[in-house]
Amino acid sequence: MELSLNTVTVKEKWGLADCIEGCARHEIPGISPWRDVLHAMGVDAAARQIRDAGLTVTGLCRGGMFPAADAAGRAASIEDNRRAIAEAHTLGARCLVMVCGGLPAGSKDLPGARAQVRDGLHAIMADARAAGVTIALEPLHPMTCADRSVLSTLGQALDLCDELGDGTGVALDVYHVWWDPDLARQIARAGSRIAAFHVCDWKSPTTDLVLDRGIPGEGVIDIPAIRAMVTAAGYSGNYAEVEILSKAWWARDPEEVLPLLKERHLSAV
Amino acid sequence: MELSLNTVTVKEKWGLADCIEGCARHEIPGISPWRDVLHAMGVDAAARQIRDAGLTVTGLCRGGMFPAADAAGRAASIEDNRRAIAEAHTLGARCLVMVCGGLPAGSKDLPGARAQVRDGLHAIMADARAAGVTIALEPLHPMTCADRSVLSTLGQALDLCDELGDGTGVALDVYHVWWDPDLARQIARAGSRIAAFHVCDWKSPTTDLVLDRGIPGEGVIDIPAIRAMVTAAGYSGNYAEVEILSKAWWARDPEEVLPLLKERHLSAV
Image 1 (spheres, rainbow over the protein chains, first blue to last red):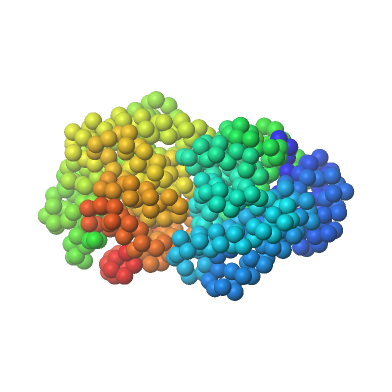
Image 2 (image 1 turned 90 degrees about the horizontal axis):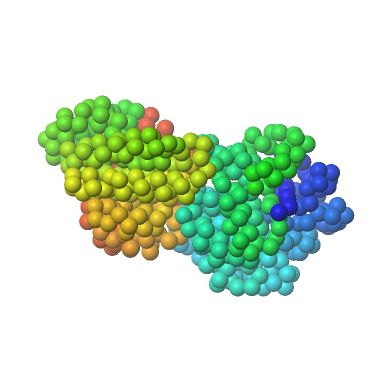
């Protein structure tokens, strides 16, 4: 697999233009922007610079966040997802990664939030298919269920893909799924629907529920074993996208981090 | 359901004798000791005082912790589990709660750790059956997979029960399972094998992976919905055991906490 840099990995130091230039200079052939840095740079300018640099856009992060406390909030989310689909199309992104959202503020209705995710996805699929943008459902670690993602397992994501049909797939991040006793079976079931493969590591101990990820090799995940399953299942994307949310790594100079990620891509992925 | 106090809930302020006396005085009819406070008091003295106070021992926390880096470590763990079974028998505990253990130090071999859990359970079942002690497998939240429990879902726990046979059950803690998309189905499958029902709450946001639990009603878990599923499935234990690991709650005076737990037991469980 080739290496792709998710821009959140260096978010404290680099904007998107820096990331594009840095990937080109460090010979990292893939990039996956978050929408905040994309908007800061401008979508058309970003698309042009990425194309000029010869980078593959392995994904756009992120759509989703469907559940909301009222109908206006849900409609606004769907509109925002339509904009994200258009942006992914402009970038030529291989997929739009969906972080589906947590419970609406004040709600304890988990089945209801999951229904809202389902409804939101149904509402955007026509746009996604028209734009040729693959909707990549990303199950997030169950510890994010309250505030980020009621989509919690690969099996649940694939059930949604089965229901939504063409134009859907999954974004598989080892950090979110490594613990799953059903992982091997569900990866085999996913097959070529794996639209993105994300890597980082689970540090033991982990001191923060969001911002304490490790770089590959720094933690306890057997990343090569999961990579082998993903490859055997039929993942044809040929990129491993490194996505690190970490206060510690964000404080480091990307000029040091990128070579280290390249090394770990070879030794620990 | 009646209320049971897991002693860890007040661990910074009260030893086991205080807990027994406090439960009797506050008319909380159930108690579930951790082994550290049990050993500090002495098993026979504790059993006598609990019996004299008329309390039901809803569980003993905890056995498990099977995976180890070498055979000597695994054998030591099995011996310790045999002592825990004997203690649970002496106390007349309804079950011995099993926190099965995480990855051995330095290991990334999750399937291997799960096999060690399975082997460890097989090794102690004869003792458990001879003592009449139910082994209650407690799936822990996936965020504890590295360091506390490679047993991560109720479905996985029930698969183990199916394999181990008579004398096994599950300890179902809403904190660990509330996020599971397969929860309703697995609770129904568990049926009368639910040996313990534990309650607390998931705060949003949660700031610590171990010590930031909420009391019932403080978080986002729909505890009454899960309680209804548990009851409908055939849980006959008739106790909800409150188990709070929380730096904030540990700092409070148990004389204030216990009445609050009684109130929440009625209003939020």
